[in-house]
Amino acid sequence: MSAVALDLDGVLGDTRQLWQDWLADAARRFASIAELDLAALPEDRGEAAAELDRWSEAGIGDWRAGLERFASERAPVYLRPDAEASAALRRLAGRGLRLGAFTDAPEPLARVAVSQLGATRRLEALEAGAGALERLLARLGWDAPVLRSRAELLVL
Image (cartoon, rainbow, N blue to C red; front, side, top):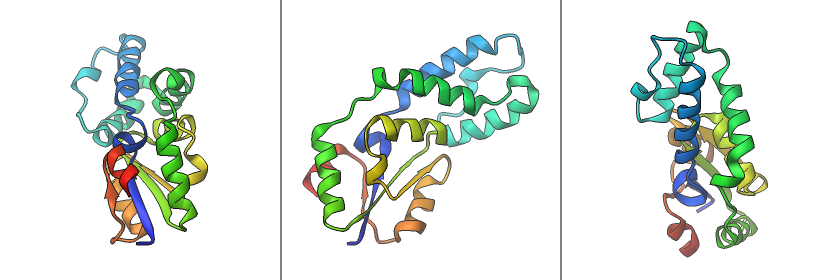
């Protein structure tokens, strides 16, 4: 084993509530654009991001910058570094393993989360959005184990 793929939301810190709260905030801000129903966005955040990209042309502007600002301001409330998980990442990196994380969350949210969780310097790669796991495995190697929970990280 030369690399490990980590599910950001399952292993390091769950970004879903921060995403949901941004959607609620965005719905209020974009209420004047009647044809937009943020509640009808797909559950998969990669697909939701693609839909938001289409809506950008309808007048919502650069939603990614808005998400990044929202996440940067609020991440400390939603995401806290975990000492045991951080120690496990250090241990794995110390063994020479290449570490990468993936999430279906949009890239600005994923980047802010990894930074808030103190994992930026331990990760060689971060893939976000639709197809993130496949892109990460293409970078790390298809034989890299995929960890989906904190418990899996701690026992590796």
